[in-house]
Image (cartoon, rainbow, N blue to C red):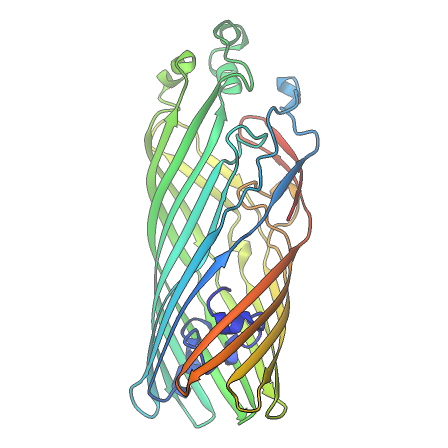
Length: 405
């Protein structure tokens, strides 16, 4: 949702009916025909997330002895993230407007200490999607307009984790030869790094309706975008376990992962009661159930890596209020939102994305420097529900605990 500093101040509740900020290219291109002349919006965001893992008897599989997982809790896994976006809207005629947007609609980043208990499931995770979005809007009547855009999306990803070579050795060579080499569970860690990128295509469209000069309505749709990520898998194996690579596993190879980013529908309105006060509300539905698993296929004999997610569709609801100063130089905003998590339970919660439902509290301000130049600032604090995890890794490790902010 971080596509407009102005809208952030009211928890994005007015985004589908916004006519003052270039983010309409992303949220509802139908509103672009309300612009007279030219509109340019440039924004940046600093996101400082926090997700702290608290262990609760994480252990190896009972088939491997069920020993507790060694290591710490990983530290405060996420790091500071910056998110940019730029929008441009130009009226071409009295009824037609052109817009262009550049933003990052999807992304995640976190990093754990290398010796933490969940190292076999996640160490470093970074995924970013850069979106280029040319759009056109047509004013059908003075009150109703429609717009559509085309999206070119570039995604890049990097995922790393440790590999417990003890279980792999037991399956390949047998317990006795492995024990003689010192290749036991949690005693011989390897490492893998997956890097890749992809280009995907999609579209978006929206409709805007001005009921009167004080009440505006908007609805928009953004399509799903399919990505076929091609890259490399780089494995590191300690010398004492090098015999495991003779079967053409745990060796550097090409890798491929397919993922479909979800489509979404956004509804909203804004209403100005009087010269001082306005309210807004919106609802966003996101088709997260498209993300059932992440499967990585290797060009070597390495078995597919499968991350079961089984995400579910979500709703996000937001309310906001604006107060305008007497001379309209200042506008103060506040907002609240409830944002559902797509993660259904602890078994499907990944250490890479330890997501949970969120409650947003936001505040923002706009200062009109000149008639046609505004500066926006906003702050949001997200209160996260504690998130339980009870997830089995590919080498029999079971990470059990809870994340808190």
